[in-house]
Amino acid sequence: MTKKGKFQLLSYLVNEYLIYYKSLNKSKKLVAFAMFETVNINPIITVLNKFLRERYIQYYTIQLNMLEHIRYTFILNFEEVKRESIIKAFKDVYKKVVEENNTIRFLKSSNLERKFLEPIIKKVNSKVSIMKKGESLLLLNNKNSLLLDFYSIDFDFLENKDSFVNNFIKIINNFEREGYLIFNFKIDNNDEIEIYPYFVENIIKKKELMDIDKHINIFFNSNVLKKQNLKIREISNYLWRLTIFSEHFPLRHLNSLFTAKNQNDLTNLLRFNKEFEQNLLNNQIDYIRLSKNLIFIEEKYLILVLLKLNSEYIQKIIEKYHSKYCIYITILSKEELEKLIHISNFKSLNNIQVLNSDEIINLNFSKSRNNV
Image 1 (cartoon, rainbow, N blue to C red):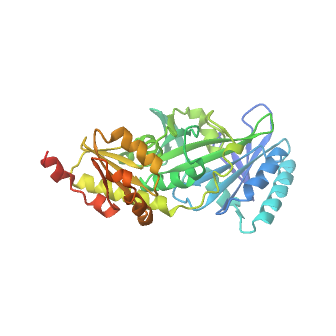
Image 2 (image 1 turned 90 degrees about the horizontal axis):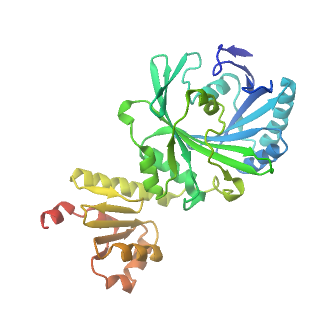
Image 3 (image 1 turned 90 degrees about the vertical axis):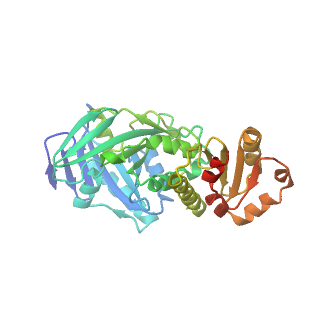
Protein backbone atom coordinates (compact mmCIF):
# COMPACT_ATOMS: atom_id res chain seq x y z
CA MET A 1 0.00 0.00 0.00
CA THR A 2 1.33 3.45 -0.89
CA LYS A 3 0.26 6.84 0.39
CA LYS A 4 0.50 10.01 -1.65
CA GLY A 5 0.39 13.71 -0.85
CA LYS A 6 -1.35 15.96 1.63
CA PHE A 7 -3.90 17.58 -0.62
CA GLN A 8 -7.22 16.49 -2.03
CA LEU A 9 -6.15 15.46 -5.55
CA LEU A 10 -3.05 13.61 -4.38
CA SER A 11 -4.30 12.31 -1.07
CA TYR A 12 -5.03 8.67 -1.77
CA LEU A 13 -4.05 5.09 -1.02
CA VAL A 14 -3.33 2.42 -3.62
CA ASN A 15 -3.72 -1.23 -2.68
CA GLU A 16 -3.57 -3.75 -5.53
CA TYR A 17 -6.73 -3.29 -7.64
CA LEU A 18 -8.21 -0.33 -5.73
CA ILE A 19 -7.32 3.32 -5.23
CA TYR A 20 -8.90 4.91 -2.12
CA TYR A 21 -9.97 8.47 -1.28
CA LYS A 22 -11.90 9.95 1.61
CA SER A 23 -15.37 11.12 0.70
CA LEU A 24 -15.71 14.82 -0.20
CA ASN A 25 -19.05 15.10 1.64
CA LYS A 26 -19.99 14.57 5.30
CA SER A 27 -20.87 10.89 4.95
CA LYS A 28 -17.40 9.84 6.16
CA LYS A 29 -17.40 7.02 3.65
CA LEU A 30 -14.39 5.68 1.85
CA VAL A 31 -14.44 6.15 -1.91
CA ALA A 32 -12.59 3.60 -4.04
CA PHE A 33 -11.99 3.11 -7.74
CA ALA A 34 -11.12 0.10 -9.89
CA MET A 35 -10.20 0.25 -13.57
CA PHE A 36 -10.08 -2.18 -16.44
CA GLU A 37 -9.58 -1.98 -20.19
CA THR A 38 -11.33 -3.83 -22.98
CA VAL A 39 -11.83 -3.69 -26.73
CA ASN A 40 -15.31 -5.26 -26.73
CA ILE A 41 -17.67 -3.70 -24.22
CA ASN A 42 -20.64 -6.02 -24.61
CA PRO A 43 -22.01 -7.71 -22.55
CA ILE A 44 -19.92 -5.87 -19.90
CA ILE A 45 -22.28 -2.89 -19.81
CA THR A 46 -25.20 -5.20 -19.08
CA VAL A 47 -23.25 -6.77 -16.19
CA LEU A 48 -22.29 -3.39 -14.73
CA ASN A 49 -25.83 -2.07 -15.04
CA LYS A 50 -27.00 -4.98 -12.93
CA PHE A 51 -24.44 -4.16 -10.22
CA LEU A 52 -25.41 -0.50 -10.48
CA ARG A 53 -29.06 -1.31 -9.79
CA GLU A 54 -28.06 -3.56 -6.90
CA ARG A 55 -25.89 -0.72 -5.50
CA TYR A 56 -22.65 -2.71 -5.56
CA ILE A 57 -21.21 0.27 -7.40
CA GLN A 58 -22.38 3.88 -7.04
CA TYR A 59 -21.53 4.76 -10.62
CA TYR A 60 -19.24 3.70 -13.43
CA THR A 61 -17.63 5.59 -16.27
CA ILE A 62 -16.48 4.69 -19.76
CA GLN A 63 -13.45 6.72 -20.82
CA LEU A 64 -11.96 6.92 -24.30
CA ASN A 65 -8.54 8.41 -24.76
CA MET A 66 -8.40 9.92 -28.26
CA LEU A 67 -4.82 8.65 -28.58
CA GLU A 68 -5.82 5.11 -27.55
CA HIS A 69 -9.25 4.96 -29.12
CA ILE A 70 -9.13 1.21 -29.80
CA ARG A 71 -9.54 0.45 -26.08
CA TYR A 72 -12.32 1.42 -23.70
CA THR A 73 -11.32 2.20 -20.12
CA PHE A 74 -13.90 1.49 -17.41
CA ILE A 75 -13.72 3.22 -14.01
CA LEU A 76 -15.85 1.66 -11.26
CA ASN A 77 -16.78 3.61 -8.13
CA PHE A 78 -17.36 1.98 -4.72
CA GLU A 79 -18.47 3.80 -1.56
CA GLU A 80 -18.67 2.18 1.87
CA VAL A 81 -17.92 3.08 5.48
CA LYS A 82 -15.57 0.11 5.89
CA ARG A 83 -12.76 -0.85 3.54
CA GLU A 84 -13.65 -4.53 3.97
CA SER A 85 -17.09 -3.89 2.46
CA ILE A 86 -15.52 -2.22 -0.57
CA ILE A 87 -13.14 -5.15 -1.08
CA LYS A 88 -16.02 -7.64 -0.89
CA ALA A 89 -18.11 -5.67 -3.42
CA PHE A 90 -15.11 -5.35 -5.73
CA LYS A 91 -14.40 -9.09 -5.65
CA ASP A 92 -18.00 -9.88 -6.61
CA VAL A 93 -17.88 -7.44 -9.54
CA TYR A 94 -14.40 -8.59 -10.59
CA LYS A 95 -15.47 -12.24 -10.69
CA LYS A 96 -18.55 -11.60 -12.82
CA VAL A 97 -16.83 -9.24 -15.27
CA VAL A 98 -13.94 -11.66 -15.87
CA GLU A 99 -16.40 -14.54 -16.30
CA GLU A 100 -18.11 -12.60 -19.08
CA ASN A 101 -14.84 -11.73 -20.79
CA ASN A 102 -11.66 -13.47 -19.69
CA THR A 103 -9.51 -11.15 -21.81
CA ILE A 104 -10.32 -8.17 -19.57
CA ARG A 105 -7.36 -6.79 -17.65
CA PHE A 106 -7.96 -4.97 -14.36
CA LEU A 107 -5.24 -2.43 -13.64
CA LYS A 108 -3.18 -3.01 -10.54
CA SER A 109 -0.84 -1.06 -8.22
CA SER A 110 1.42 1.38 -10.11
CA ASN A 111 -0.44 0.83 -13.41
CA LEU A 112 -3.73 1.67 -11.71
CA GLU A 113 -2.23 4.75 -10.09
CA ARG A 114 -0.73 6.04 -13.33
CA LYS A 115 -3.84 5.43 -15.42
CA PHE A 116 -6.21 6.91 -12.86
CA LEU A 117 -4.23 10.16 -12.54
CA GLU A 118 -3.36 10.37 -16.24
CA PRO A 119 -6.02 12.94 -17.30
CA ILE A 120 -4.42 15.62 -15.10
CA ILE A 121 -1.01 14.28 -14.02
CA LYS A 122 1.48 12.81 -16.48
CA LYS A 123 4.13 11.97 -13.87
CA VAL A 124 2.79 10.39 -10.69
CA ASN A 125 5.37 11.84 -8.32
CA SER A 126 5.21 15.42 -9.63
CA LYS A 127 3.48 18.45 -8.15
CA VAL A 128 0.47 20.05 -9.78
CA SER A 129 -0.73 23.66 -9.68
CA ILE A 130 -4.11 24.64 -11.11
CA MET A 131 -5.27 28.08 -12.23
CA LYS A 132 -8.02 29.60 -14.35
CA LYS A 133 -7.23 30.81 -17.85
CA GLY A 134 -10.40 32.22 -19.34
CA GLU A 135 -12.91 29.38 -19.55
CA SER A 136 -10.07 26.84 -19.44
CA LEU A 137 -8.09 25.29 -16.60
CA LEU A 138 -4.30 25.51 -16.75
CA LEU A 139 -2.41 22.69 -15.03
CA LEU A 140 1.26 23.25 -14.27
CA ASN A 141 3.02 19.92 -13.80
CA ASN A 142 6.69 20.62 -12.96
CA LYS A 143 7.99 22.20 -16.19
CA ASN A 144 5.05 20.96 -18.25
CA SER A 145 1.77 22.80 -18.78
CA LEU A 146 -1.59 21.43 -19.86
CA LEU A 147 -4.62 23.48 -20.83
CA LEU A 148 -7.97 21.73 -20.38
CA ASP A 149 -11.13 22.76 -22.21
CA PHE A 150 -14.41 21.20 -21.07
CA TYR A 151 -17.39 20.54 -23.32
CA SER A 152 -20.85 19.24 -22.56
CA ILE A 153 -22.46 16.95 -25.14
CA ASP A 154 -26.05 17.30 -26.31
CA PHE A 155 -27.64 14.37 -28.15
CA ASP A 156 -31.13 15.87 -28.44
CA PHE A 157 -30.95 17.00 -32.07
CA LEU A 158 -28.21 14.67 -33.25
CA GLU A 159 -28.96 12.34 -36.14
CA ASN A 160 -27.51 8.82 -36.12
CA LYS A 161 -26.82 8.78 -32.38
CA ASP A 162 -25.78 5.14 -32.54
CA SER A 163 -22.67 5.96 -34.57
CA PHE A 164 -21.65 9.03 -32.56
CA VAL A 165 -18.74 7.48 -30.67
CA ASN A 166 -17.11 6.04 -33.76
CA ASN A 167 -17.66 9.21 -35.78
CA PHE A 168 -16.52 11.55 -33.03
CA ILE A 169 -13.23 9.71 -32.52
CA LYS A 170 -12.45 9.76 -36.22
CA ILE A 171 -13.17 13.47 -36.50
CA ILE A 172 -10.99 14.29 -33.48
CA ASN A 173 -8.18 12.20 -34.92
CA ASN A 174 -8.63 13.87 -38.29
CA PHE A 175 -8.01 17.24 -36.59
CA GLU A 176 -5.12 15.68 -34.65
CA ARG A 177 -6.56 16.70 -31.28
CA GLU A 178 -6.05 15.06 -27.88
CA GLY A 179 -8.46 14.51 -25.03
CA TYR A 180 -10.93 12.23 -23.30
CA LEU A 181 -14.49 11.33 -24.17
CA ILE A 182 -16.33 10.52 -20.93
CA PHE A 183 -19.64 8.71 -20.33
CA ASN A 184 -20.72 8.59 -16.71
CA PHE A 185 -23.44 6.05 -15.80
CA LYS A 186 -25.61 6.74 -12.74
CA ILE A 187 -28.94 5.50 -11.46
CA ASP A 188 -31.70 7.93 -10.50
CA ASN A 189 -34.38 7.70 -7.81
CA ASN A 190 -36.70 5.89 -10.22
CA ASP A 191 -34.13 3.14 -10.75
CA GLU A 192 -33.45 4.39 -14.26
CA ILE A 193 -29.89 4.53 -15.57
CA GLU A 194 -28.81 7.89 -16.95
CA ILE A 195 -25.75 8.72 -19.06
CA TYR A 196 -23.84 11.98 -18.47
CA PRO A 197 -21.50 12.61 -21.43
CA TYR A 198 -18.76 15.20 -21.85
CA PHE A 199 -15.49 15.80 -23.67
CA VAL A 200 -12.25 17.21 -22.25
CA GLU A 201 -9.66 18.49 -24.71
CA ASN A 202 -5.96 18.51 -23.82
CA ILE A 203 -4.05 21.42 -25.31
CA ILE A 204 -0.31 21.10 -24.85
CA LYS A 205 0.98 23.75 -27.25
CA LYS A 206 -0.43 27.24 -27.79
CA LYS A 207 -0.37 26.78 -31.55
CA GLU A 208 -2.96 24.03 -31.10
CA LEU A 209 -5.59 26.51 -29.89
CA MET A 210 -8.73 26.28 -32.00
CA ASP A 211 -12.49 26.19 -31.54
CA ILE A 212 -12.89 22.44 -31.83
CA ASP A 213 -16.59 22.69 -30.94
CA LYS A 214 -17.30 24.72 -34.08
CA HIS A 215 -15.64 22.13 -36.31
CA ILE A 216 -17.43 19.25 -34.59
CA ASN A 217 -20.82 20.96 -34.73
CA ILE A 218 -20.40 21.77 -38.42
CA PHE A 219 -19.55 18.16 -39.17
CA PHE A 220 -22.55 16.78 -37.28
CA ASN A 221 -24.79 19.63 -38.44
CA SER A 222 -25.94 19.94 -34.83
CA ASN A 223 -24.83 21.79 -31.69
CA VAL A 224 -23.39 18.63 -30.16
CA LEU A 225 -20.53 20.29 -28.23
CA LYS A 226 -20.83 23.33 -26.00
CA LYS A 227 -17.81 24.79 -24.21
CA GLN A 228 -18.30 25.09 -20.45
CA ASN A 229 -16.63 27.10 -17.71
CA LEU A 230 -15.33 24.71 -15.06
CA LYS A 231 -14.28 26.02 -11.65
CA ILE A 232 -10.94 25.02 -10.14
CA ARG A 233 -12.57 23.17 -7.26
CA GLU A 234 -14.51 21.02 -9.74
CA ILE A 235 -11.34 19.44 -11.13
CA SER A 236 -11.73 16.65 -8.57
CA ASN A 237 -15.01 15.67 -10.25
CA TYR A 238 -13.12 15.20 -13.49
CA LEU A 239 -10.39 13.18 -11.80
CA TRP A 240 -13.05 10.96 -10.20
CA ARG A 241 -14.85 10.75 -13.60
CA LEU A 242 -17.99 12.07 -11.99
CA THR A 243 -20.69 14.07 -13.72
CA ILE A 244 -19.57 17.63 -14.41
CA PHE A 245 -22.50 19.07 -16.33
CA SER A 246 -26.26 18.67 -16.03
CA GLU A 247 -26.82 17.28 -19.55
CA HIS A 248 -27.87 13.66 -19.29
CA PHE A 249 -29.85 11.12 -21.28
CA PRO A 250 -31.72 7.90 -20.42
CA LEU A 251 -29.74 4.79 -21.27
CA ARG A 252 -32.82 3.29 -22.90
CA HIS A 253 -32.63 6.00 -25.59
CA LEU A 254 -28.93 5.33 -26.28
CA ASN A 255 -28.72 1.57 -25.87
CA SER A 256 -26.74 0.98 -29.05
CA LEU A 257 -24.51 4.03 -28.68
CA PHE A 258 -21.44 1.91 -27.96
CA THR A 259 -22.20 -0.98 -30.30
CA ALA A 260 -21.82 0.71 -33.70
CA LYS A 261 -19.36 -1.12 -35.89
CA ASN A 262 -16.45 0.64 -37.50
CA GLN A 263 -17.53 2.44 -40.62
CA ASN A 264 -14.98 2.41 -43.40
CA ASP A 265 -17.27 4.63 -45.44
CA LEU A 266 -16.93 7.41 -42.88
CA THR A 267 -13.16 7.12 -43.06
CA ASN A 268 -13.41 7.53 -46.82
CA LEU A 269 -15.56 10.63 -46.40
CA LEU A 270 -13.12 12.18 -43.96
CA ARG A 271 -10.23 11.39 -46.29
CA PHE A 272 -12.07 12.89 -49.26
CA ASN A 273 -12.98 16.05 -47.33
CA LYS A 274 -9.43 16.52 -46.16
CA GLU A 275 -7.98 16.09 -49.66
CA PHE A 276 -10.62 18.35 -51.22
CA GLU A 277 -10.14 21.15 -48.70
CA GLN A 278 -6.37 20.93 -48.98
CA ASN A 279 -6.72 21.37 -52.74
CA LEU A 280 -8.84 24.48 -52.18
CA LEU A 281 -6.29 25.90 -49.76
CA ASN A 282 -3.43 25.21 -52.15
CA ASN A 283 -5.25 27.15 -54.85
CA GLN A 284 -6.29 29.95 -52.48
CA ILE A 285 -9.98 29.28 -53.01
CA ASP A 286 -12.40 30.74 -50.46
CA TYR A 287 -14.80 28.22 -48.99
CA ILE A 288 -17.14 27.63 -46.08
CA ARG A 289 -17.91 24.12 -44.78
CA LEU A 290 -21.60 23.91 -43.97
CA SER A 291 -21.58 20.27 -42.86
CA LYS A 292 -19.69 17.04 -43.46
CA ASN A 293 -21.63 16.72 -46.73
CA LEU A 294 -21.83 20.33 -47.92
CA ILE A 295 -19.18 22.90 -48.79
CA PHE A 296 -19.83 26.39 -50.20
CA ILE A 297 -17.15 27.76 -52.57
CA GLU A 298 -16.41 31.26 -53.85
CA GLU A 299 -20.00 32.36 -53.09
CA LYS A 300 -21.00 30.60 -56.29
CA TYR A 301 -20.67 26.82 -56.01
CA LEU A 302 -22.20 24.27 -53.68
CA ILE A 303 -20.52 20.85 -53.41
CA LEU A 304 -22.60 17.96 -52.11
CA VAL A 305 -20.70 14.79 -51.15
CA LEU A 306 -22.54 11.68 -49.94
CA LEU A 307 -21.50 8.19 -48.92
CA LYS A 308 -24.60 6.61 -50.43
CA LEU A 309 -27.54 7.70 -52.52
CA ASN A 310 -30.15 9.66 -50.57
CA SER A 311 -32.61 10.98 -53.15
CA GLU A 312 -34.83 12.78 -50.65
CA TYR A 313 -31.91 14.67 -49.13
CA ILE A 314 -30.50 15.57 -52.57
CA GLN A 315 -33.90 16.84 -53.66
CA LYS A 316 -34.14 19.11 -50.61
CA ILE A 317 -30.69 20.57 -51.32
CA ILE A 318 -31.55 21.17 -54.96
CA GLU A 319 -34.89 22.81 -54.14
CA LYS A 320 -33.20 25.12 -51.67
CA TYR A 321 -30.10 26.13 -53.64
CA HIS A 322 -30.32 25.41 -57.38
CA SER A 323 -31.80 28.79 -58.30
CA LYS A 324 -28.88 30.60 -56.65
CA TYR A 325 -25.80 28.41 -57.07
CA CYS A 326 -24.16 25.90 -59.33
CA ILE A 327 -24.38 22.52 -57.56
CA TYR A 328 -21.90 19.68 -57.98
CA ILE A 329 -22.94 16.31 -56.59
CA THR A 330 -20.85 13.21 -56.01
CA ILE A 331 -21.35 9.90 -54.22
CA LEU A 332 -18.28 8.04 -52.98
CA SER A 333 -19.81 4.64 -53.70
CA LYS A 334 -19.44 4.00 -57.44
CA GLU A 335 -22.54 1.79 -57.54
CA GLU A 336 -24.63 4.44 -55.80
CA LEU A 337 -23.24 7.15 -58.08
CA GLU A 338 -24.40 5.16 -61.13
CA LYS A 339 -27.90 5.03 -59.67
CA LEU A 340 -27.93 8.80 -59.30
CA ILE A 341 -26.68 9.38 -62.85
CA HIS A 342 -29.61 7.37 -64.21
CA ILE A 343 -32.26 9.34 -62.34
CA SER A 344 -33.84 11.36 -65.13
CA ASN A 345 -35.17 14.13 -62.89
CA PHE A 346 -31.65 15.37 -62.17
CA LYS A 347 -30.63 15.51 -65.82
CA SER A 348 -33.23 18.13 -66.69
CA LEU A 349 -32.21 20.61 -63.99
CA ASN A 350 -30.02 23.59 -64.77
CA ASN A 351 -26.88 24.32 -62.77
CA ILE A 352 -26.68 20.72 -61.54
CA GLN A 353 -23.79 18.40 -62.36
CA VAL A 354 -23.18 14.86 -61.16
CA LEU A 355 -19.46 13.98 -61.13
CA ASN A 356 -17.33 11.23 -59.70
CA SER A 357 -15.09 11.97 -56.71
CA ASP A 358 -11.93 12.42 -58.82
CA GLU A 359 -13.67 14.96 -61.04
CA ILE A 360 -14.83 16.89 -57.98
CA ILE A 361 -11.34 16.90 -56.48
CA ASN A 362 -9.83 18.20 -59.73
CA LEU A 363 -12.35 20.96 -60.42
CA ASN A 364 -10.50 24.19 -61.23
CA PHE A 365 -12.38 26.88 -59.35
CA SER A 366 -9.60 29.39 -59.97
CA LYS A 367 -10.22 29.19 -63.71
CA SER A 368 -13.96 29.51 -63.22
CA ARG A 369 -13.45 32.53 -60.99
CA ASN A 370 -11.24 34.25 -63.57
CA ASN A 371 -13.88 33.76 -66.25
CA VAL A 372 -16.56 35.50 -64.25
